[in-house]
Length: 249
Image 1: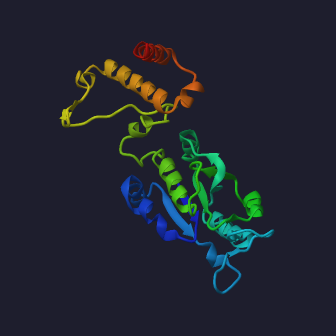
Image 2: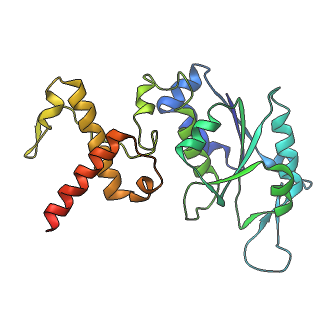
Image 3: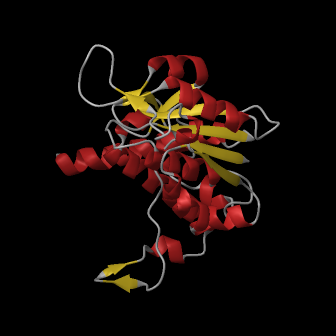
């Protein structure tokens, strides 16, 4: 996979290129990264790529021509068809399902905006999709781009040492992950649940599913509202709700 970032701050991507599982996978050649600085395509000696907004208002707007040229240059670096994504709070939310979809593509171009925004004409003509990482605003698209990259790359075969790590993550099956424990057996008066020390894999699997459902019901009930529960999940969820009613009564 080739991932390119259209950014005026390419150094910000050093953390995902050189560290952690993504850094190791990059060294192994599982994925490649290139940054393209749109300032290189500016039509002025100082490299300005922004200007005042038509209609007035605060801030500066990133101009369409240098960004368009940068995207075209990036596309030319690969024989594969590239998907161009702009990181924007106005985009559709990034989900595990979207990350899994993007992980199957050979070439991603991530457009990292700055200032007050990007000329709408560039978004309409040169961007395939806008993606948001949350209902908040940050100073630029670089950090959201790195979060998208990390979410996508961990689903690319070979990036994680054990693919089961990704398969057991929160949202991988539509609900939150269960609690996890390791040594010591007791910490600050809290012991590892007995079932996890039983060696009974069927009981452990059921306990983990139940804990995932409990955590999802407590923290993200909206995920359960739109989920088609399998029989085992329905049974466990009824048990959990019954326990809650008994505690409240």
